[in-house]
Image 1 (cartoon, rainbow over the protein chains, first blue to last red):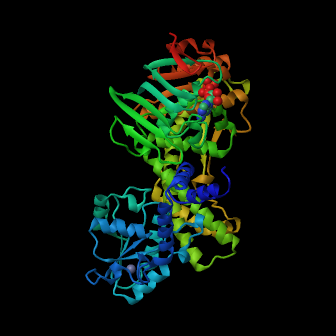
Image 2 (tube, rainbow over the protein chains, first blue to last red; image 1 turned 90 degrees about the vertical axis):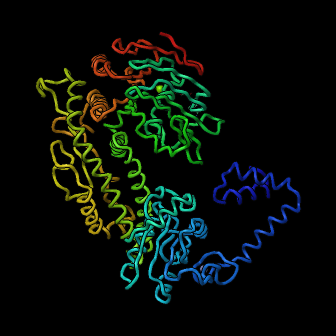
Image 3 (cartoon, rainbow over the protein chains, first blue to last red; image 1 turned 180 degrees about the horizontal axis):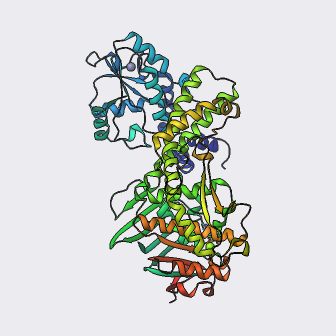
Length: 198
Length: 391
Ligand SMILES: Nc1ncnc2c1ncn2[C@@H]1O[C@H](COP(=O)(O)OP(=O)(O)O)[C@@H](O)[C@H]1O
Ligand SMILES: [Mg+2]
Ligand SMILES: [Zn+2]
């Protein structure tokens, strides 16, 4: 344990995903000895994401305006909607260049251990989108792990009775137990084109 | 199969050790605390991706080191594969085969198969059901590595479902939204649970004849007058929490367990006990609630068997595993960690005779006299962080 502010900083950094206790310590001491200008830039960047970034009112992706670039793009097929857990998954699917529809970002997956149920996800928004927009196909691209699979099953059960709506799931081949964002482009692209209806 | 070479870096007490091995019997001799079990534990890790002594990976890393590396060259029917595992708690472990690119550790399951006897095995007979479930599941994975995935998927779903039962139950809520998500978790629990249960039932059916035979072999001559000259028969009964399955599932000569049948049966059981589960906030049916009953004559071994009989049963379970795996194909490496000191003279001799012909047997002992003559082969002295060839 270090004293006061240094330990506070280490604790805060350690709470971030992907940073362990050793990494937190390293970053903290790096910041301690860094040029004031560098620290100020980091500070500003943190401030700006919290103040300046909003979530798209349609799809829930991170955006600079109330509606994101993809939702505004008229060349994208409005009948196709790909449902993902997080904004980073939108990037992963975009990288494949296989998908020309739009997205819906749930903001996570069913995860009772962390207190996340359907009400904590943007599922109601999805249902009302289906009710009002011209959506004909929903592609469920949640992560291929326990929580993602449960979320997919939940959505399939919820959406299967909508008239004229087809619900598909990413084809398997994605490594099980994984994260969508870490699937390589080729695998994810194949999974998209080989999606199966459920 | 046999291990031709074992190399450890920062594993347990070993900073670095190179151990060339041969087929046949090998004894590792050294005083308590010199690191003999640590050596064979590393081989067990390559075979099962876990330790037979501790649940997590952290204790396996040498104090002060960041990661441990285990390398084992495994020869199976004249083909040699080099398995390398890097164990680093807090990060994903990494694996390589034949110096190729990194793969998931799960992909190396099946390259080395081991059957390990240890003094702790007495708990198989006397301990709680969880230890017998682990025994079955580990053997299942050794037989068919894909069950490693089934087992971990089941455990993850079980944790999530139990959390939901607890929160929904505590809030005295069982509104339709909760029930709808609970149904989703029910479905996944039933799917993975059925696969795991079917695997276990078939395994038990296949294992029973081996256990009966090996128990008779190890316990021969132990019989009391009451039992007659043939002695008592050792058998296994799978005591499942999922009722309503066909009677002959899990019995030798019975039908093979059908995962689809089990899945729908498990689903109906879940529907029946929903209220009870919500009230108690726990998952009450499924393979995590089952037990494997060890039966000796007419009575369960637990609570009835004498100390000697309990040892015989534990040995019979391990020997049966070894014979079952051999029958499936590749003969596993046998590891007898400090067991001879625990046994009386007769059991010692019978065990030694029974394993003397195995393709590779590794025996650890505190003193050379504890290694039976039938198992004299290569000998290494383990002392002060070094392993030296002694004969
Ligand atoms: N992670 C570790 N780092 C360093 N030493 C360890 C570690 N784990 C166990 N040990 C040491 O290993 C020794 C026990 O080794 P073990 O193989 O069980 O001995 P034995 O020869 O009796 O089988 C103990 O001295 C213990 O302190
Ligand atoms: Mg030992
Ligand atoms: Zn949008």
